[in-house]
Length: 333
Ligand code: HPA
Ligand code: ZN
Image 1: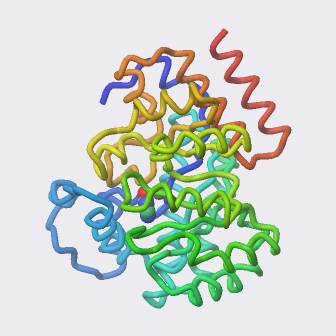
Image 2: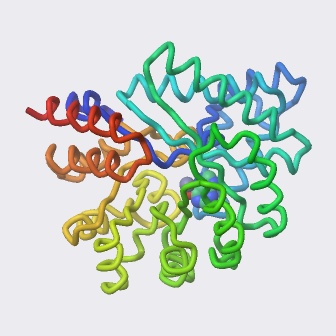
């Protein structure tokens, strides 16, 4: 996808990227080699060709399968550093990265290994490229609530490196309300709250309602199905609960990129940010997601407003928010 000058240069904030979803096939091969693992496909190109998801479940199979090469602190360091370099190159100023500790602890890789590797990369990336980043720890909703709670407790010694918690993985038959006690405890511990409500799930509206009214999250990841319920749309607008939308991801997981929904929601006063989700699997980083909007006929002021929404919805310091907003204004002037 060819990027326009406007999209390339726009100062950006990324709020919905799974660091494990940034594992490019080339890095997957390098890590497999380093760890003495033989992969099913013989080349990175063939790995890429094997990605043909039709829904969330088929995507998640490839996503978890890819993680098997991540074993050591150096592997997590290399993963996060290469993502942050890529993001900085797309003029991302600030990123809140999801990570899935249970996808690793369930394979015998320690929480410490995962977070130390990612954290060291964050420190080095900020020093090298000026990109500021923080972490959101996601609970896997298809594992037991007790495992999520144990993971929350395990994270507490590293709480200064983690800004918030989220909820991801397979949403089918796994309503957010199942995790209310875990989110309540996370809030008590000082974590900020968000949760995935994936597109076109069987109970999308009920799940969005639970995230807003039972969990009390400050944002929703995806969540564009809210358009089906005008009262809930009004509640999001009035309570300033924004959506982190991922158009390219949507086009794999569902029938469309949800551009019409994004337009409708923003005109109703709901904040919507544009994000990449799992760029190595869906074939587009944040700039390509903005480009999809431009290619759909949306103008530069619409794109700049999405970047302003991302700043406003972010959990960055007031000073950093002001600085990025000023940069966006200057860029657009
Ligand atoms: N939805 C649910 N789980 C995920 C996703 C997503 O978009 N990406 C990585 N894990
Ligand atoms: Zn996601």
